[in-house]
Image (cartoon, rainbow, N blue to C red; front, side, top):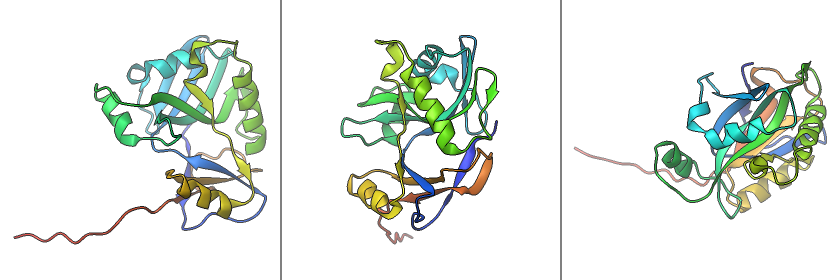
Length: 202
């Protein structure tokens, strides 16, 4: 299943029909569980299972026979932010600070049921129930984390995300099905902390 992608906008949408999530600075990963076997696929359908074994092991422990999860592989810092540079260092074989974490925000299939036609809110409810069903003390409990959301209040959510030095915010229509490809059901707003420079040379 190709992933659903967000469209970049300049400000978050208003209204209670939107759910707002933190925007993470990592790699988009679809995790497929099939009878204890796991494949981690990048946004471009490349197999990343061997590059992220802790995530694969954690997905294998989920209380399901088959499942397809959508989320982002990140390095989670102690202050709750994510570091793309630390993730690249880890994938390059270097050690770095923070914990490798799979922040999961969607559930597309579960035990033979196609959930993509359900509204987002229903899929997230099923996802939370799946993660809450893990046995106590499971090794992957800290590796896979549920990406929570806030309903409505998009402008306030975005301001708080930027105040906390997060990457930005994702806004998703709570009643929409999962539609692969880029569309307007998912919108992203980035916290602009950059500066522009003119570099001259001869």
